[in-house]
Length: 222
Ligand code: DC
Image 1 (cartoon, rainbow, N blue to C red):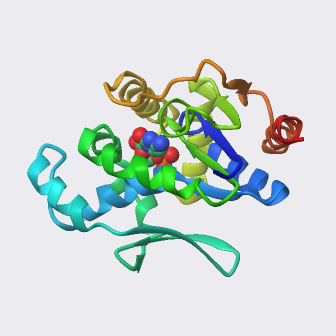
Image 2 (cartoon, rainbow, N blue to C red; image 1 turned 90 degrees about the horizontal axis):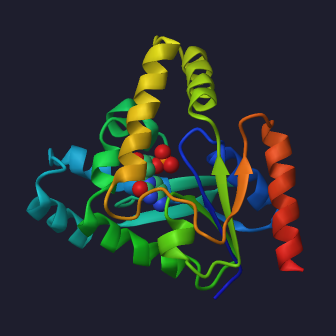
């Protein structure tokens, strides 16, 4: 087993950006587990499969091939050999992925794939259930939190930059809905592991969060 850092937290806590930077600084392999659930959702969209159609989902899972690779220094996501790095972040996937991620058969397939990735490398893996389910014995566990209002604020600003027209209130409402789905689902809900270190990013810059987390990991690693 390599050295494993588990980083969990809600969408909008800055997890993705922070994980990427911490991985670079500490030379860890960065694994974005949300991308894997996004791939399953996208494959189901391609095949017109709804989250209720479990038999069809099981067939998809039998032959799905998901790879997280590095190309020219950037992380890319391959779904059955096709580069879907950008497509998995589009609204059509955003809208349905939480429903697929709540399905037991999907988690039963994805979780062992993630565990395998920690076998031979030193990794930082980000998600919702990494410290609780995927790597309950991780060397370092961090729970990166942020207030719902600040998460909505960040998403609202990102939307403005992308030219997406949505009011702050609409963004806040959709973040609240997603939060309920993620924290109250039956299997592997978003939850802080008992032994995770809590970091609140609400009033911190990305750089401040990175600095804090690098320090925590260095202390545990030495
Ligand atoms: O982090 P993200 O927004 O890319 O995650 C996409 C979806 O997958 C989101 O609905 C949460 C879910 N997810 C999960 O259930 N467990 C994980 N370990 C990672 C993501």
